[in-house]
Amino acid sequence: MAKRKKRPSLENYLSTGKVHWEIEAGETCSATETQTSPREESLPVEPAEKGNLSEQELLFLSMLEDGERADWESRFRKGDVLFSPLHVMEERQAFAEGKRGELFKLRRRKAPLEKIEEEKDIAFPLLALIEERQRSFCIWCNHVKS
Image 1: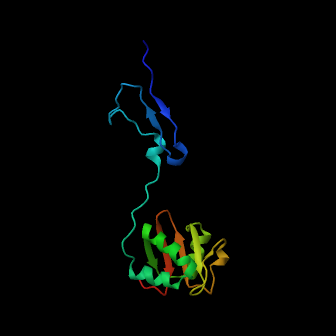
Image 2: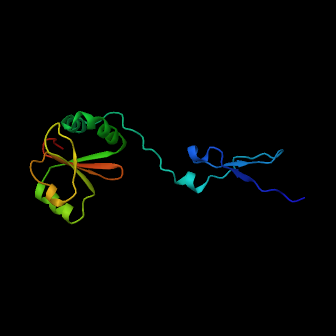
Image 3: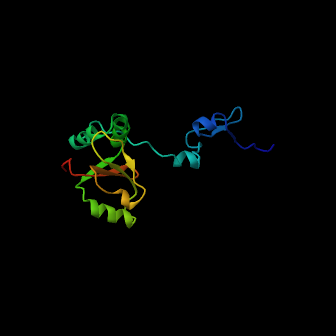
């Protein structure tokens, strides 16, 4: 009698992203026999959140608009935040050369953040620039001392 192969069960696949292997009656499947799917191995792991934010991070968050503060606070808890002094002309040049990723600017306290599309957008009035990288943030601001 030919041996039947194990078949994958796609029950709840769309909600969980996991493939469950069906086993014939009478067979047992040990932990060493189970396999993880390539997709399961490549799922991104959610980074652990920091307990408390630093004094610099809290000071910067206090400058943001109330509606954006909660969103950026959760982002800061999941990543690293680096503060540097703001030099407008240097940052404009770095953006023009493609050395900066996605940038946001804060024109004044309690104002909404604006996404920077062109180098000419990096101009006064300017309180801070935020660059969001994969799991870290660079903030250029002269009002938060590093």
